Amino acid sequence: MASPPSDQSKVFNDPIHGHMEMHPLLVRIIDTPQFQRLRHIKQLGGVYYVFPGASHNRFEHSLGVAHLAGELVRALHQRQPELDITSRDILCVQIAGLCHDLGHGPFSHLFDGKFIPKARPGHDWKHEDASVKMLNHLVRVNNLRPVMRRHGLVLPTDLDFIKELITKPQRPERRLSCPPYRGRPEDKSFLYEIVSNKRNGIDVDKWDYFARDCYHLGIKNNFDYSRCLMFARVCEVKGQKQICFRDKEVGNLYDMFHTRLCLHRRAYQHKVANIVETMITEAFLKADGHILFEGSEESMSLSATIDDMEAYTKVTDDVFDQILNSSSDELEESRNILQAVVGRRLYKCLGQAQPTRRVNLTDIEASWEAALTRQFPLVLDSEDFFVDVINFDYGMKEKNPIDSVRFYKKANPNRAVWIRRNQVSNILPQQFAEQLIRVYCKNMDPRILEAATETFAQWCQDESLAML
Image 1 (cartoon, rainbow, N blue to C red):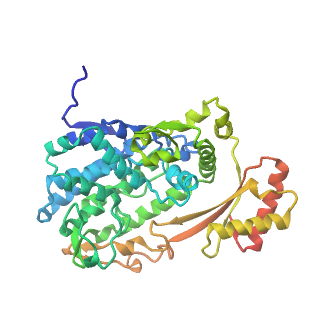
Image 2: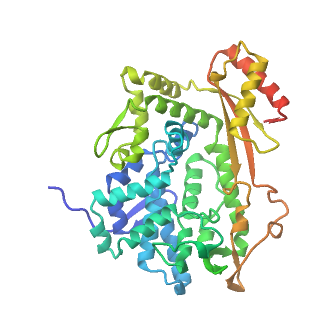
Image 3: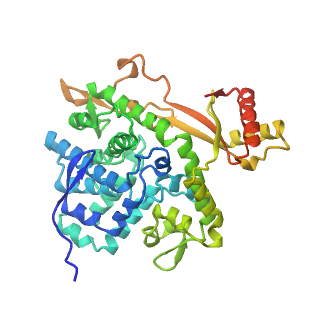
């Protein structure tokens, strides 16, 4: 007979944060099949096929976010006891950090950013929504409500609070017209900025994945989150409590957002990684309906599993190997694509270009197809190509996220101030978003590639695009 689960804390040795002690309730959540599933989902998806060190998974990232969430909320509690942060608050914030990525699918953002939009067009679904559904499922099937109560949580209030911490939407400026939070009162609104900060993007989720991804990618990280932990403080801004930072940390926060941009440029949006993810997406789309997962009531296709957490629990990166190692005729096309990925027979990038004005994908695709028809109407087939428009920014599109951050000075730590860009440096970015256009070719025929490359160069010239 199996022994009952332990109600003791555990220490995890992490290459990023060192020894991380987890509360017994967090350990109970970690030791469920729904959470252990994250061991089999790559943090960076197809980037692993370009950077061989990027083999880390959502599992260790989630532990790291739970750890940092606890570090930040405890630091605020010790620094400002008047905030009345309770042990319940601390535990809920840590659980939210631990569970914020429960809803990720195979190859992480490939699933919700590429596969689901094409498999189920018009279906508004994000992995954060699935994280909340999976948390509900995890609590129910593992009978964790009594365990939560035993550790001091008040249900359903605290469970609502945890889910709000994961998916909390940005509140409009006219906050008085907004309904109150269900989980915590208005005077604890700053707690909603710790795990997922919709106000300015400064949260422990980013602190962990910047450090963790840089470590595994072999890219230097210029951002020091430990200083943010040391200098974070809650101040009142327009009647609402917000997490603010010491004025001298403004340069460190600019480094944080620049690190985000560099990671996207050098790794997350690497042209070969994007090709790999496009090919895996195509394989999944062709396999959808031919590979099934047992749900709570029936077997479900890959794209339908997001509606049933029992089935979704079984969906991980292993889908790749299920298809690759299959022998069924229905999966032949998918299998061939994945064999090409494994054998490094990848689509080719014809080139990259930078537009001088903001563009959208639909217009660029139409322009490229017109160029194909005009240049080589009998040689090149538009089906052999696909266009990608990549957006790079500091996390808030064209806006400077630091404009949404408030700071305090040593002489008056309770007064929030705004720091303008020209008060920091004259060599900071003048704009905070740009785009990159890439055109890829699926046809490996050297003659087709040569003609297509010639067409791409002419197209860039005709459209006034700066080739890179």
